[in-house]
Image 1: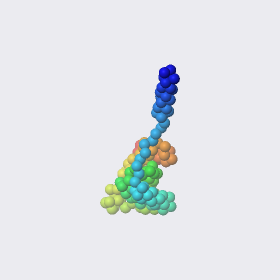
Image 2: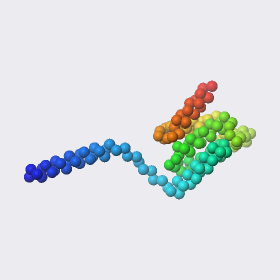
Image 3: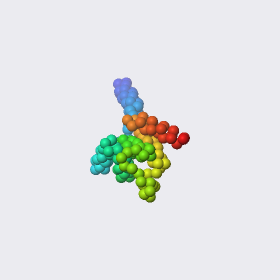
Image 4: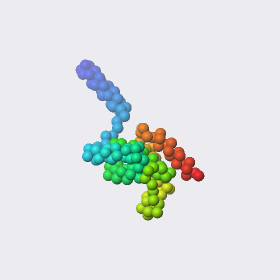
Length: 154
C-alpha cells in the first residue's frame, strides 16, 4: 500500500512538472497557407524585387503589391512586400524613379498624388512595425517613418 502511494505521488509530481514545462514554451500559431497562393505571391514578390531594385519602377511595384495584398494578405513574406510598397510610395511622393506620374491624368492624380502616396507609405511601413516586430525591414521602416513625420511637420 505504501509503495502504491509513493508511486502515485511520484506520477503526480512528474505530471505537475511536465505541465509547467509545457506552459513555458512559446508556441507560435501555425498559419495554414495555401500552397498555390503562396507560390503566386512569391512570384509576385520576385517580380517586385526586380522592379524596385533594378528598374526603379515604383508604380509597377505598387500595382503588384495591391494585387497580391488583396488576394493573399497572409503571405509568409508580407513584411517584405509591405516594405517595397512603402518605400515605392515614399519615392514616388518625392518624384523619384523611372516611371513618372502624370497628374493631368485623373486616374494618376487620384492614386498618385504626393499626399496620398505619403499616407500610403506611412500605412505600409507602420504595418511592418506593428504586425512584424521581428522583421528584418523594421529598422528601415522606422527610419523612413521618421523622415515622413519630419516632412509632415514642414
